[in-house]
Image (cartoon, rainbow, N blue to C red; front, side):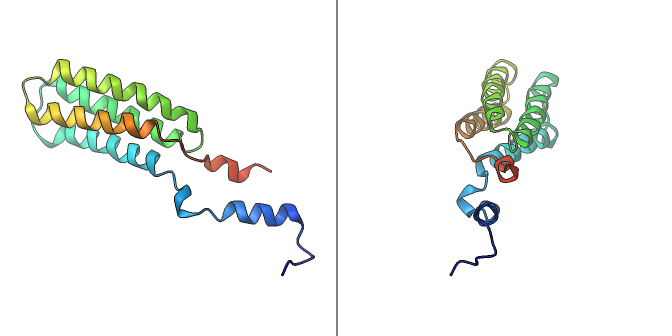
Length: 128
């Protein structure tokens, strides 16, 4: 039964606030996790200076953009550009170390794929 004391706009606002599990921005969270992993991996095993920077710096930027894209979904496309940069820079700087090479390439490809997944903006919950 509908409560006559609750207006239609209030009930619509309540339904917007109760987000379904499918609306969780899992692709942004995945990008954030990959960015953090890249930062950790830069220090987890020996790298050349160029390879360390090619993991740490894109990892930092991917993490920041992933957080920003939670409220501004079009920013996710910047992570796609960063992923391409990560892949290219890894190929150039880490060709001698197989673990660093594959870590950069696989993480870059995963971030690239995740950047193509759209998600509902959490900011839309606060619009009237």
